[in-house]
Amino acid sequence: MNCAYNVPKIKESFKHKEKPYSDPKKSSKRRHAGTKVNLLLLGMSGTGKSASGNTILGQKLFVSRPSSKPVTKKCQMEETEIEGVHLHVIDTPDIFDDDMKSSVRDKHVKRCKQLYESRPFVFVLVMHVSRFTDGERDIMEKLENAFGREVREKTIILFTRGDDLQQAGMGLEDFLHTCQPDLKKILEKCGNRCVLFENHRSDSAQVETLMDNVIGVIEEKQT
Ligand SMILES: Nc1nc2c(ncn2[C@@H]2O[C@H](COP(=O)(O)OP(=O)(O)O)[C@@H](O)[C@H]2O)c(=O)[nH]1
Ligand SMILES: [Mg+2]
Image (cartoon, rainbow, N blue to C red):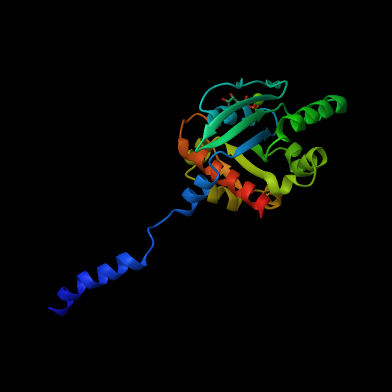
């Protein structure tokens, strides 16, 4: 009897004391509505930079196709708005290509800087989930040489071909636990910020996860 009598009382006090639940991610996103961000897609040829750009944009604006030769020859910028954040997505050629003349590389790096430096920016280093090449072992050093030491605080690693993992019955966590020590070091240098994309799927959750990381980088910069 007592119990039955007390129930409404407890509920009433709960109602007055507790604040309505607020998802911290959602309120952080609301705070960033109207923010302008440049995303620079970087990585080796064929890793899926252009395809990932198209997934972020929600439309095929960058040329992406299988090829033994680089397909993207120059920087291209497109824009979109996601959850109120105004994004400039910048696709790039493979500026880490050892066959590229240093004068050509310098020209691309200069162009990238012109495109991204006007607003808060985030680097997205695109890597193929099941292919880690020799050229990628020192990719952070190459990035730092080109763009400066702040790349460490501003880089998110985006692994493509998420379906390869799924077909092997693995998730991103399993992959990260079992990956090569050199890849682990790269991840550590980027604060372990990474996301998994499958560009053959138009799944908005992968873009949302990327946006959570982008906002994380921008907020760290402000504090
Ligand atoms: N299965 C699969 N293929 C992908 C994915 N991302 C890119 N590709 C393919 O990989 C090839 C190279 O992609 P592209 O975007 O041109 O690479 P980029 O040279 O880094 O710009 C294309 O045939 C894409 O369709 C992915 O997530 N899954
Ligand atoms: Mg490309």
